[in-house]
Amino acid sequence: MPDTIQAPPQTPPKEEKPASKSESLRTPLQLKKPVTPAYTIKKKLKQLNLAHKLKSALLTHQTGQWFTAIVLIPWALCAIYFTLIASDRYVSEASFLIERSDSGGGSIEGLSLFGVTPQASNDQKILETFIQSPDMLEHLDQKLSLKQHYIESGDWISRLSPSASQEDFLDFYRSHINVRYNDTNGMLDMEVQGFEPEYTKKVTDLILLKSESFVNDISHNLANEQLTFVRSEVERAEQRLKDFTRRLLNFQNETGLLSVEEQGAALSGIMNELQAELIRSQTELQTLTSYLNENSAQVIALKQRISALQSQITTEKDKLVDSDATSLNELAAQQQELQLDLELATQAYTSALVALETTRTEASRKLKQLVVVSSPYQAQDAKYPRVAYSLINILLILLMIFALARMIRATIHEHRD
Image 1: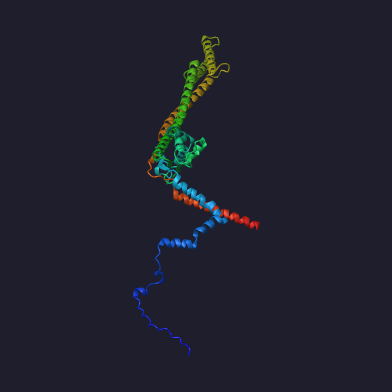
Image 2 (image 1 turned 180 degrees about the horizontal axis):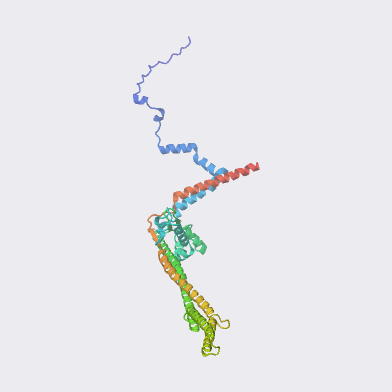
């Protein structure tokens, strides 16, 4: 009988204890070892291998190399410069205008505030040009050693080169000063940049002082030129008046006549009387010859009187209209011409005196002065460089250059294909 295999004795199954409520709610992940956030980020980066992909994209692929060379490296260099190397530039501001003493009158409606007229606008623009002129720069350099400040202060990029020419110095100065004309109120707004706040304020104060001197000099010079011209005209008119007066006196002394017209009138009266006497004598002679002999004493005497009257009339007539010598008519014409010249010279002299007084009054009314509305101050915080603004603009420019380069490269490849 074959051996039979006996089954091992079965043990009753072990009764499992019912799981507690907390154990039944556990998930498989909660049974594992807890992880930290840093470990999770590191694990995800390792899984994604972002560093390797970024390196491969920027240094292996041609597009990434271009982006790195055109955008990332230049922008990183600019960021290092603006954040670590660039020197602070402080700003001192001032607002001023040119005002005339008669600015309240004659101004156009809508532009009368602070005496703002078209002429005032021209004055402000002239002053703006002067502030940015080589003359102002030379004055600042002599008084404050501005060129030395620009060379010794600031970093190696923003400073002025020691070998800079005068033209380069002027361009550098103009890039660090900003003068704007405000059309609304007619003022000039000036902004001066410097590497030291106290020095910047000194430069601004000196610019205002020199500008005030420039305005005063120009204003007074114009007024003096006008007065000088009018005074010269007065002197010329006075000299002409003296010359014509002297000529009339010399004429009177030479002719011995105070007034030729009066003398002519007197001679005319005498001739009229002589003519009347001659007519009476001739009438009387005719009466006498009617009843007396020609050889009578009365007739002879009367004839002699008539002859004397005729001779006197001829003499007096020659004084008036003698063709051989200077007649009284010619003397009267000469004296009348001299008197007319004298009257014109007198009127010209009188007009010149009136013009002199008017010009003196107008010149005093039109004198100009520099009015400082907002005085310069010493800055406490640097206004430039504006790091965020500059870096954002640089990044945008670099991205535009990169996009342009990509476009050119794509165009070239398309033409090749």
